[in-house]
Amino acid sequence: MRLYHATAASNVPLILKAGLIPGKSPGGDSYAAKHGMKLPKREPSVYLVKSKDAAKAFSMCPAKVNNSAGAVLAVNLPKDEAARLRVDEAWQDQAGALRYPGKIPAKYISVAENEIPVEEAKKLNDKKHIVADVDDPFTQVFMSLFG
Image 1 (cartoon, rainbow, N blue to C red):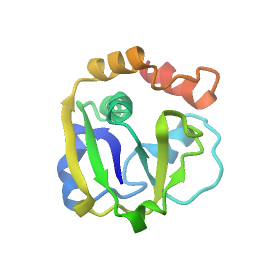
Image 2 (tube, rainbow, N blue to C red):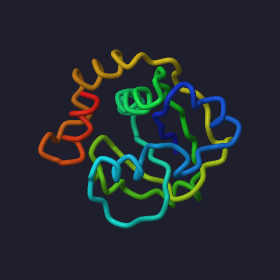
Image 3 (cartoon, one colour):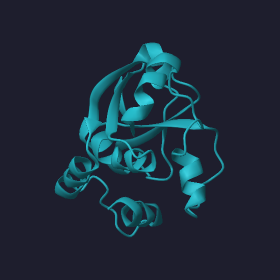
């Protein structure tokens, strides 16, 4: 199953070497907690989306946090690993958001698109309305910081 992960371009070399390790960056649940977003208690996870465009739009977050361009990684999970995927409770299946509990090995990861300017990611989000539920508190914080 092919999914996508948004990150800062500056993170790509380490991810391609070590894999995607939940909790290693200021994204995901640590980002949500820092900004007062309420989430259920859950295991550390890697966050993925079903579409490359959604990942590209989401890349503006880690890009701004890391003062870097954005990047989209393709994650090709084998069927047995894909069975571990869960809907990301923060987005409630909006934008095809999923989470994978645990580390994703580097052998499943490749670069789909690198060095995405934040402005380009924002334009894509504005055009396609990937983050569309403006009444959702998580989305409101997301858009207030990066919209």
